Amino acid sequence: MKVVGFAGYSGSGKTTLVEQLIPALKLRGLRVSVVKHAHHKFDIDHPGKDTWRHREAGAFEVVVASDRRLALMREFEQPARLSVHHLLAELYAGVDWVLVEGFKDSDLLKIEVWRPDAGKPARYTDDDFIVAIATDQPDRLPQATLRPVLDLNDPDALAQWLVDHGHRFDYDPENYA
Image 1 (tube, one colour):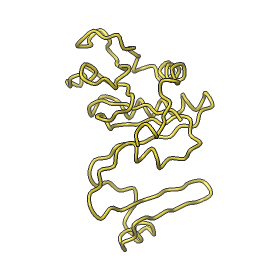
Image 2 (spheres, helix red, strand yellow):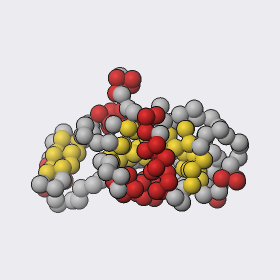
Image 3 (cartoon, rainbow, N blue to C red):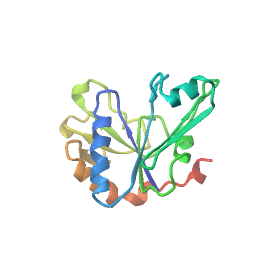
């Protein structure tokens, strides 16, 4: 499996880019999964639904499945510090690409999503794990770089860049044990 992170500040367009890359990679015959960092308490369940009721009753894990979908929810009694590598280990082994959104401080190879109009500093100058920058205004990069600069508004070209450079993103969990 190949793993690439997308890092950038809130409002930079990470979610939109990942959303556009999924079908672009699928059109190339690739199976794509996503790992997303969420902040604090979030919920995918709704009060009153069976899975919510089981979780509220104290189940450590609730797995719900149909012939089209499977979801696993796990409750931690104490706050847990899960790395992106813990989450990658939970994924189905038959996936071709994993797009990781968030986890900006991880040791994964990442593409920085940067928009100067968001008013946030670029991270590529201080993060050796950033291997490319996706931006809508390359002429406004704060510092010259030898890293590839990709067009944030051309997800098909970005998907092709990933495929062409896929060998760089091979993920071996043994390297992170």
